[in-house]
Image (tube, rainbow over all chains, first blue to last red):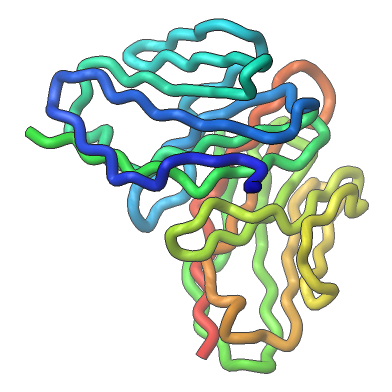
Amino acid sequence: QKEVEQNSGPLSVPEGAIASLNCTYSDRVSQSFFWYRQYSGKSPELIMSIYSNGDKEDGRFTAQLNKASQYVSLLIRDSQPSDSATYLCAVSRSSASKIIFGSGTRLSIRP
Amino acid sequence: DAGVTQSPTHLIKTRGQQVTLRCSPKSGHDTVSWYQQALGQGPQFIFQYYEEEERQRGNFPDRFSGHQFPNYSSELNVNALLLGDSALYLCASSRRQGFIREQYFGPGTRLTVT
């Protein structure tokens, strides 16, 4: 079992719709959860972090965390073509810990 | 406020050679982590430096070594290069203390081993 699992996609979503990206993790001690966006040929860019159960909203992005189910998700509202990228889910145990990444989900927003 | 910087951006080496990659952390950050990202995969943790010492290490052989300088910048060295070392090498910086736990990545160094 991988430590952080994501569907590789591609996930195709029409422009203006809600894109839903999901991630599960195996380490119950994980305390910090991150979503990174990575455009082809570029480095990962942090878009959301979440530490407590529930929802966290930032603009068009909402991160959802359920520690009991070991599940993290990212919702992107009003999807734009510029949202087309690979989204990496990442977890860590503490501020001093390494971050463990999933393999990423490719998201494609179709006009 | 300068972000994380890395050099060089691209590098081509031959099998058996050695390579050194460099990273300067974001202003205010004291911890540097290095990752290797193969095509189509997520970044894999190599090691982390704080206070000029290696604090954690991932599943990478001793051919991979590093250093952190007093100004928090860091180097990644890879000896006896293999074809499989071809990847994007990413440096991420963070602040070890406090509640903020995010790591921010530099632009990466694309290493090609022929």
